[in-house]
Length: 339
Image (cartoon, rainbow, N blue to C red; front, side, top):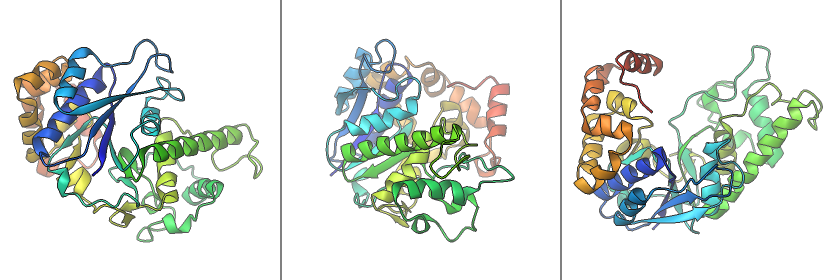
């Protein structure tokens, strides 16, 4: 069996972690692994005290979660996405499935067949990086330079179903979920690769790239996508790949039948299938859970005070816009946008 690992800290994430734990216990009663909530500690790169409050800690414990501390020594507040890399580096040894806290479990994870020796990650992504200039360099040169820096076979990472320079040809993930054979090893490698990308970017920006200026990364911004830039290299280096095509999990189990990455409450209610809403609301209904979740304003308004139903009534899930921005815009016009 494996551990589910997430990050919890004071504020939004502690409440999201509670909802994740609630959906796990509701939808996955046969799951025999652990739920480990990694918590950044004071004294690192988070100002003040980032630890969770007593109410969230108590609820997580009652839902069977283990809370483990980690030092946010590398990224912290300046780059909160780095939390997941540092958390995994200090998580319990052994197979793991990392989930962003804004994830709902929909079905029993005991049914999943995962080959943890072939890591993978979420394909629910868009073309956020790199940003290609008309005059280049292109995907081949940019991604190729990163693979070369790690001594990896770039060609074997590509999906030949897509043409050269189409962004989908190149291994790129959303970091909302990922898994591997050993959490600390995976986390340390992720931090190492992220540091390498930072170094290459800095040298390129300074015109000091080893290949001579300007360097493939000189025109790129690596923030806030650093974790997602490094993740494909980590997955490939550890012998994994895309779900169902190199990665050790069937496509559609996560971000599909067994989990849903909802991101923000207004988008959950506007776009999620009815099955997802039913699972989330059922898991959030018990009084001991409601008491804690309603301390978070978006949960109170959308889960318990009817804003979710109002947002849902605005859209036809069978005919949603292809782009998310019109959905966000309408929610904002209707004063139903909260984060």
